[in-house]
Image 1 (cartoon, rainbow, N blue to C red):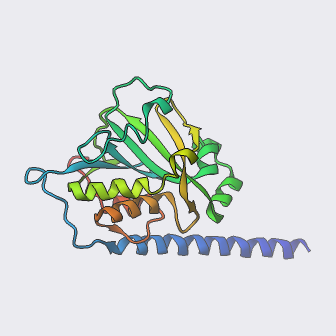
Image 2 (spheres, helix red, strand yellow):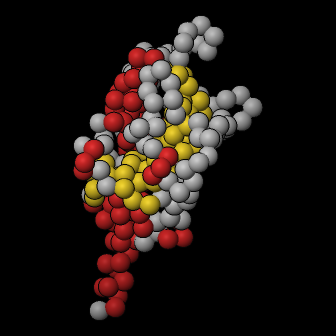
Length: 229
């Protein structure tokens, strides 16, 4: 009896490992197939552009945008009054998307609950995570990407599409004094992750990115790293 149970566990473990490897391989292949393959980043000195940053913490990606440009003023959409440290001279706003329960219940990786992870993989409601920054510096993890004005307007429209109507928006406290969560449209699941959301927004803007990007590396490999980082 014990031997049969151990054998079952062994096969379950093998099956889980095989599924994980297949998923990882599919993610690598899917992220290597380009969308908007003919797109080229505008040269910094030859045309007007908006510079955003694509950031990654190794698990999750976000899009960092200037707080105010001729194309968009984010102060009305994501007011600093929604965060604790509202009086700082913010210059940028970072937006990412993810599963509500996982985001809200996992302020640090030490708080990860396997049941929450499984629930997110199976499907759950989404939120937008919005953080306010003061002059964020480019780095190997926060890479600049230049967009033409019309491309940036398309990116803005894509992000706003994920917000519910003004009267239906729900606000949730953030992890720190400079961030906050908002209820968002869409359903998170294993095939539609936070990193897929990032690449989908970039694709809507017309920038080159991968087709299916469940992992952050699949997003970041399409954003050139600055020399010296």
